Image (cartoon, rainbow, N blue to C red; front, top):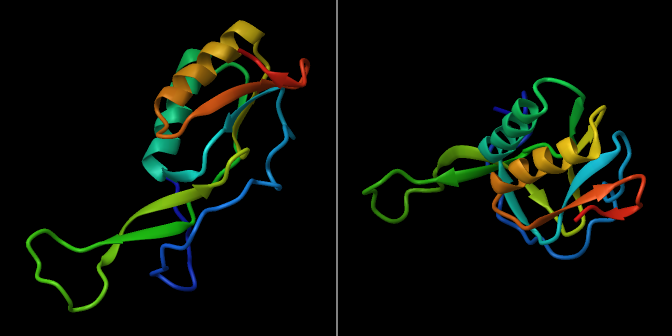
Amino acid sequence: MLSPKKVKHRKRQKGRNRGVAWRGSSISFGSYALQVTEPGWITDRQIEAARIAMTRHVKRGGQVWIRIFPDKPVTKKPLEVRMGKGKGSPEQWIARVRQGRILFEMDGVDTATATEALRLAAMKLPLSTRMLSKETRGCLS
């Protein structure tokens, strides 16, 4: 699973995730991309599940880029613990994504294979997404 090697502060506050993504909202590396259409959190396990689904469908052909990284820790208190006594320990890592952020890019495969691979990856994610293509300069649906 993806996680940072070293962080300055182990516990962070929840924060807000408003607005539209300006950085990371255009295709940079590949020919096909998966773009998120709503803001939210994506965990390290969900990123890995989507990556495996994509690479299995293309049978290790082509190339896949992951454009997000889970750098925010989410803490959780153990079950059946009373209120108080401080904040819980970090349980998982998440990536905060804003609307319009590119999650995955793909190259080296034909359009039909890329569409199906990105569809399988989108099924593993908790947010609504759309597929983009560099040739058509827009949505691939």
